[in-house]
Amino acid sequence: MAEQYGPVLHVHAELLRDFAPAVDVEDATRRIRNGQVGYEALRVLQSCGDLRPAFVRVLDAFELSGFVSNEDRRGLLDGELDVDELVSGWFTGDRTPRDPRRRVGRQAAIVVGNAVLRAASERVGPPAAWKHWTRTVCPCCGGSPDIALVEHGTERTLVCARCDAQWRARREGCLGCDTDDSPAIARIGNPELDYDLVMCNACGRFLKERPRRDLESLIVERALTTELDLAAEQRGLRI
Ligand SMILES: [Zn+2]
Ligand SMILES: [Zn+2]
Image (cartoon, rainbow, N blue to C red; front, side):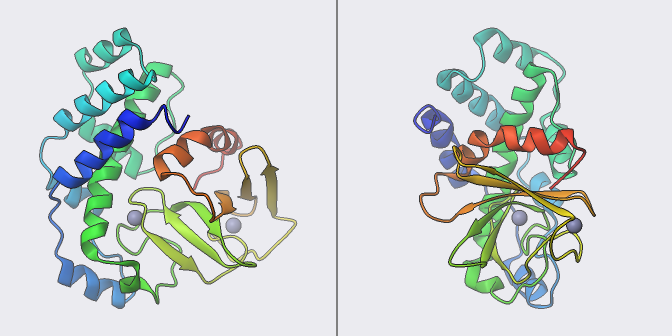
């Protein structure tokens, strides 16, 4: 599967290089130091102009990778699809569509949105710039983490679902509420994927947790673990 993603990763890397999101680095750094989120994701998105050409490129790569048929790709481009709406819908946490074609459209939009915000967060600086961050939302864009990487013992690094920024979690247990441990927190291991789905029944948040070692590109990691998201969403949980 990782190899199948080659064309998508290639276009993502190009977008990351080509996008020039407007970020006031000095302001963002100062804000993060004061415990505020660095920049406003929607405004940064708008600063990149028309996203449709990027979306078309990602869909082409999806077809090359075999994730979308030629017919569905054309259907998505002929339809009244609003790329900005898809990306901002993803920002605000809308659900994965059930219709397969719409779902592919959303996935392509997510690759575009991720490239914009990732480029923005990379401008904000190296992770050392938010070393002292203690909140559970992303220091750069304010998004929620969807993946936790476990290092020695209980130390966890959280990964922003939107911009891939990583920061250390100072707290054990649930990130959404103060629940420390069982019985509110359910953990379902998936040895095949090497992931645990961690769910909090007190506040309805979930997280995908895995060891830090052997991490693939995050696009691939997220694609490999979509079934975990769907399982959590079916229970009414969110990241
Ligand atoms: Zn972020
Ligand atoms: Zn909770």
